[in-house]
Amino acid sequence: MSKVKGSPGLCFVEDRRSNNRKRSSSAMAETHSLQDLRQAAVTSKVFVQRDYTSGTICKFQTKFPAELESRMDKQQFEETIQTLNNLYAEAEKLGGRSYLEGCLACLTAYTIFLCMETHYEKVLKKIAKYIQEQNEKIYAPLGLLLTDPIERGLRVVEITIFEDRSIGSR
Amino acid sequence: MKNCEYQQIDPRALGTSNTRTSTTLPCGRKNSQRLRRKWEVFPGNNRFYCDGRVMMGRQCGVLPLTIGLIFITSGLFFTFDCPFLVDRLTVFIPVIGGVLFVFVIMTLLQTSFTDPGILPRALPDEAVDIERQIDNSGSASYRPPPRTKEILINDQVVKLKYCFTCKMFRPPRTSHCSMCDNCVERFDHHCPWVGNCVGKRNYRFFYAFIVSLSFLTSFIFGCVITHLTLRSQGVNGIIQAIQDSPASVAELVICFFSIWSILGLSGFHTYLVASNLTTNEDIKGSWSSKRGEESGNPYTYNNIFTNCCVVLCGPIPPSLIDRRGFLPPDDAPQTVTSDTELPPFMSKNDANMCTQGTKELLQSMALSTVIQSTCTPGTPKTAPVTQESLLRTVSITVSPPNRPPSTGCSGHQAQRPIDVSCSQKGNKRSAHHTHKPMLRVSSPPYSLSHSPLILSDGPDMGFIPLN
View (tube, rainbow over the protein chains, first blue to last red):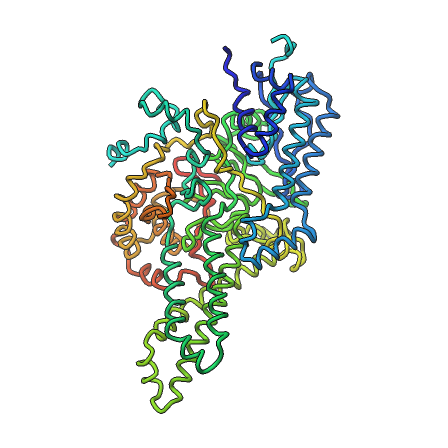
């Protein structure tokens, strides 16, 4: 059996945020193409790096990697990355809500974080759902897998490229 | 000692280095059945308690001293000064004191136990990819591993350095702390008094801590002065007053020395917050106009109020290291470890090291000065060496804490043999130095010049120094 390098990525995706993932992993198992990706061999991985031109906010480069040219549509890729960037911008947005949260936290000597989930964490859950959706609908049928950047410390968006063969035959 | 360490490895911890897998011990099989959490294989120099919920730097530094001083001073205040002042003045005095005290302790613990914004190390695949990109881009030219990248942030050229330990290009404002062996986002400094780095995620706790501590010390100082004044207004005079309440004098002394340093530090950090700078950047002068060029801080919003809001009330990103996540059962952890790392779990060894370490601490506090040059050769930029290296020594030679919290949590840490050898070298080297550091340590280390704080953008040990 070929070494399934893809599975660690999948396992990380499943084990992280285990509450959510327990529900979603069963959903993933039902999706035929994602399940089959487990058996597929990994050809290579592409890393989409961070874009720091706007400062330290979390933003990824929208440049289309050369390795994906044969696999997918540039437009689609850019759209995915742009949506991710917008979601991260929403998480880090400085506005009335985040200031209110910060002030309230300060007044309670930051103990409020023990009971309350921060806005950022809520958006991260949204992002995780979005990535899972994208994987199921768009990337898995093309033999690709997006890894949630939070699994990589928000450094990169890792795209695993699986062997290109008819996935349903296995 | 190395043999001793090896025998005391916790068998549950095996499997972190790829060579030691389940074949070496029968317990290894059990290892694969029990899912381990990621904090157990964390490569940095950190301690984790309560199954990964609580973390701090490896050397707790003088955190016990900080807590002790605060408790003792406050305890003396509540016991000896408050009764008198409640009689003479108002009951609100202990109330205010109590509120401040609780706030100080809570923010201190949060600063110490929160992840400062550690960046997890790059996985091997990523590292390989980056290396390939560096080679292709040709920016290496004649220099051996090139490792800087220039980017434009708000029309300002910013250099990103490559971190050899974490195998990635550090994001802007990120620095590698050599104490904790981690890259920390928006790295401010490593604070030995708090026993942890101060970075993006815990800077506001740190700021709240020093501000509330300055209020507390000022408050206690004022109350003690009032107390002694009121007492001495009786027929007996000041000498009798002091004899009646000797604890007040102790509090006066502690508060007097603390106030200068803590107030100064608060003022300095207020300036940093208002200009959206970090201690690291300020000390290195990253954004001051050098070479006659016009350079400013590209991260500032040019508005004091906005800067304050952003730094203190902005959103806190969650911890990126996911300490409590589970490792996949069939994989050895794929993080890139530095070459010098040994099996990290030597919990039994902690107790042995503890008393030894404490003795070393006391000796080194008396004797040491220039450790930095010994341990990390070739560091290009260093703040005033004596004061900084003193604190480095304090951090290096302080051993692991005496015991984990007794609530049933177990503490694990990553021991680095290099630190031990550094401290030993340091002790030998520093034997001939003067007692000047001793004076430094007996007073609180913070001064208006803020130089005793630990900076850590130095190169990693054993690697080529960066420019």
